[in-house]
Image (cartoon, helix red, strand yellow):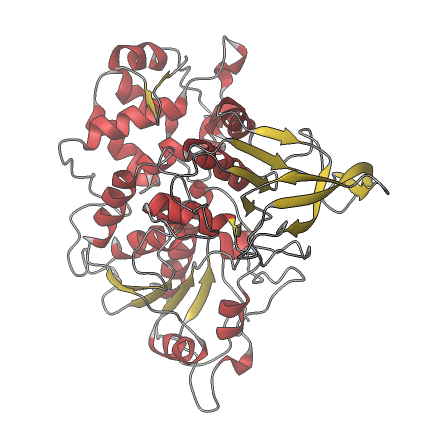
Length: 481
């Protein structure tokens, strides 16, 4: 069923449309849609309640599995997850699960609904929620969806939880880089607020380094690291440091926050781009977000430069279609080799020199490897260049906590998310009290919001499962061994 669309975000289904769509659900015994949802939302259960008009009940079912149900209803790639597994896909198309979830969440929480009782359901949480974990303390580093999901789960079990966030507000990528046309700020604020209101202690503006990490490891029963990735990757091309060449994360953050910081004499990272030419380098979802954001900023021309073709591009199909609909141009098999100022007085970028590419044998990613074609260089004009080449691993947090890391620099974890901490993580004579877990992009290298939520919940449950059963409490030993 097609959703109604406005200039900003999709306004979803109307109630009578939702009832008809819910009526198509087969309520499968094995529920493949649930298996396709990283958070494990009981899709048939909430759809059944939608069909009967029980909006609050539907919202309660969603929240029992996913505390960011409203956010995920807007940004989750349902066509790649639950809807792809839907049995009805062979009978006229999959159920519009994402659209039904959005309407259920909006209507089920509009009147200030209290989520149902039960562990993880967001009941009225007292100091110890029934005394299931009296005296247990957890530190969570990072207030993005993974960290907040973990906090919600542990608070529901009565833990004393403190989140340490390096920026000035919680939300992480939800509140910094996902464009507001996809995820309105008020949706994030409501869901984050509900989590913090359970009694989670939130300390913003705190960057956890080695000294702080030592204290957290010695003073808490569990530490959950959910900091996300490190800074954006650089291309290494000459001129990348010029004014007007910006990382996609910075560009999107400033656009979402409504700030306007000049990066050239005329173009802003988050302001009006009217009359400006914008080049976006990369082919992932972040590149598509940057392209659409620039187009919505009234840029005269927005061009995406990608070194492979649309077939190899990692962006989701719907994100690519959205960029096309916004008027974005795509130059395939093209790679920047220099960012030029063309005599600009302030040295700001004015052009991108590129080389054409040819595809060869598959590389480690399984995609055809691009190689430059000699003598094929050309130049395109650009007043702003947005670099969307992905983000590197968060080496700062890995080193601060003494985590074992793989070749990509990501923490080594077991299936529960538990990390290995080196014996030298604490000074001589200090006791390693905390069990350490990793959740979200820090460990998976960058994935969906719903996966981050699921991993935060998984890590919290793993920590609680181990510690609530352990008696007497472990006083020494190396974590993860």
